[in-house]
Length: 303
Length: 310
Image 1 (cartoon, each protein chain N blue to C red):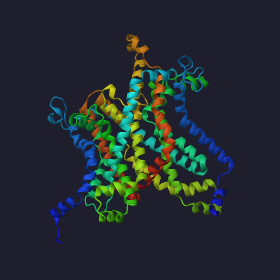
Image 2: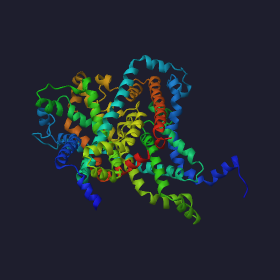
Image 3: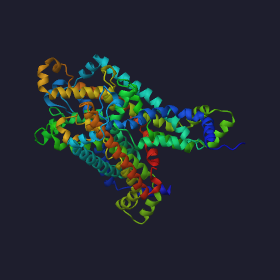
Image 4: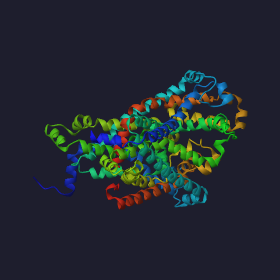
C-alpha cells in the first residue's frame, strides 16, 4: 500500500506526462500509418490514383482491386494455401523436433549431453555460408524446387533449442522423471506424458515464433523455388512488385510489348495483395504479442 | 557389480540411453544436412566449379577465387557498406530502444501497453511487406512523399529509386522502424526488474525524475546494453538481406550505397552464376564472422565472465 502510494508520488508531472503521451502517440502513428496508407491505396479508385497519387483521403474509392484479385484467384489462393501449409506443417514439425532435441540435452544424467549441446551450439558460431548451402541443396541433395528446401533451413533454430533446454532444466525436476521410471514408464512415455504437458508455455512461445518465421520467409523461395505454381505468398508478392517495377523502368521493353503493359496489375491491385498478405499476422499479433514478448525476454535473460 | 571402463562403459551408456539418443536423432539429422554439410562444402571456394565435372570432380585452384574477388573492385564497396550499416544500425537502434524503454516505463499502465503494441507491430511484417510500404511512400509518380509531402513544401519530386544520397538515411530509418520496438521490449523487461526501493530512496532524498533516470535506471540496465551491443558486434559482417535487396527494389543505380556482402553474394551466385567468386565472398564472411564472435566472447568474458557465451 505504502509502496504504491510512493510510486504515485514518484510519477512524472502532468505536463511532462502529457508531452510524453503526445510523443508516443506520434510514434505509434508512425508505426501504423504506412500500413494504413497501403490499405487505403488498395481501396482507391484508379482515376484517383492517376490524378492525385497515393493519398490518405482519396477522392474516389473502389473495391475493384479486391474484385480482380479474387476473380483471378487461382494464383493467389494457391500461394495462400502453400504458405498456410508450410507455416502449419513447418511450425508443428519444428516445435516437436526442437523439443525432442532439447529434452535429452537437458537431462543431467544423459552422458552425451555435452557433446550434443556442442554440436548444436557450434552451428550458431560458424556457418558454411549461403553459396555452400545452395550448392549442397541443389547439387548433392537435389532439393531444387521442392518444399523441403523451404522447410529444412528453418526447422531447427539453435537459440530456441537452448531456451527450451533451459526451460526443461528449470521446470522438470529429476525426481519426477526418476519416479516415473520406477513406475515403469519408458523414455518416450515420460517425454510425451510428463515433460510436454508441463512445458506448454515454452512450447506455445516456440510455436508462435515458428509461425512468424515460416509465414514471413521468402529468402529460401528466392533461392530454391523455380516453378510459378510453387510460389509461397511472400515470394509471389516479391515477384509481382519487382516484375512490375522492372517493366515500368524499361520503357523500351514496354513499348515493344503493349499487351504486356496493359495487363500489368495496377497499383491498387499490388497494394491489395500486400493487405491480403499481412492481414493474418496483423489480425492475430495483438493477441499473441504477450507470449511473444515473454519468450523474447526469457531468451534475452538467458542469452 | 563389475567395474566398466573405457569403451565398455561407452557402449553400455550408449545402450542404456539409446531412447534419448533416438529422440534427438531427427533434429540431429536436420542439423547435419542443413548446417554441417554446408560447413564441409566450403571447399568449393577453392575450386573452379563446372557442372560437367560436378562439385567433387572440378579442379582445385587454390586461392584463385579470392584473388578474383579482391581484384573485382567490389570488395571495398561491399565491405564498407556492410560494416558502416551494421555499426549505424547498432548505434541508432540501441539509443532509440533505450530512450523508448525509459520513457514507456515512466508512463506505465494501460496506455503504455497500447503504445508497446503499436511499436512492435512492424517487427511482425516481412521485409517483402515492408518493401511495399516503402514503395507506397517513395513511388516516383504516385508515392505519398512526392505527391503530397514534397508538394506541401513546394519541392520538386525526387526519383527515389535512382538517387543514391538518400538511401543510407532511408535504410537506417526503415531498419529502426522495424526493429526499435522489439529492442525496447528487452530493455523494458530489464527496467521492470529493477528493485523499486532504489527509486523510493531517491524520492526521499529529493532526486528529480531526470536524476533518477541518469543515476539509477541507466546504470542498472547498462550491463544489458553492453552485452547486447557486444553480441551484435559478432554479426557486423552480416546484414538483413531483405532490407538491402527488397526495400531498394534491387535497383542497380543504388548499388554503390545498398550493396552489402549478402546482396553481392546472392547476385554473383544467381545472376552471374559465378560460383567461385560468390563462394569466396561467402566463406570470407563466415570466417570473419566466426573470428568476431570469438573475439566478442573473450571481450564479454573479460568484462563479466558470467555473461560470456562459452
